Amino acid sequence: MAVVRPAAMAATKFVASPIILKDNTKAVFADHAASSMLRHVINEADLPLLDVNFCGETMPLDQADVVSRWKHVFTSFRPHSSQLGGLRQKSESFFPTIDPILEKYDIPPDFRYVPLAESGLNAKAISRKGAGGYWQLMPATARELGLKVSGRVDERFHTRKATEAACKYLRRLYTQFGSWSLVAAAYNAGPGFIKAQLRRQADCSYYQMRLPRETRFYLYRVLLYKELLSRPDDYSSFLSTERLTTYHVRPDAFYRQAA
Image (cartoon, rainbow, N blue to C red; front, side, top):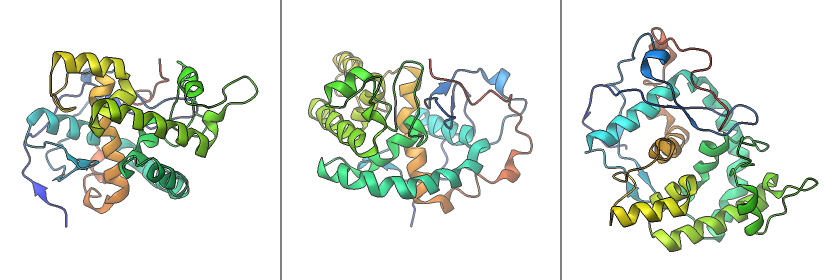
């Protein structure tokens, strides 16, 4: 049974919006001010604040800024909740393929949700920067990890081979950081950036670290998919379309191609 925490905040300020992937785009946060996105702000006080963890590292929901980001990610996803069924269907065929590979490299199973945040489970997704496949690997990184990336062959789009490469990279990152949440942050922002931040903020966790906007919300988006796919009934009331009657968004407010 899920443990419910008392709500820490009534509402949050909208600073960025998580998106569901369209074809040939990478899941990113679209930078739209609240005034241009919304005509009415949804009351989000009723989001159930359950115990949530990533690879055993508990989300500190006793911290107001953490609750604010968590509520923001859920509220921003709510207009797209109808797409959850399609993602669930894709994941039911995707997870059995990648789960044994994660286990082989001793990568915690929560990383199965990273490709949802990265590519929306679009096997052929390519960002404007050139990251490709379920795991959104950059060409140079993919080659360094042993994948073939050329005009004729691109193994970033091969589910098993790309997952093997991603797991090698994740294992390498864990050797450097010793924290799976920092591994996720480094996967998004790059290990160099995270190392630099740790020099400035010694012994700092992901949740307290000063990060770029996309990385600041990245783990929350991964955990959003974990929560919605592993215990959807706990959030079904919050995601109900009946609550969207006063929510008006520009057609492009939640989608943009990766820069």
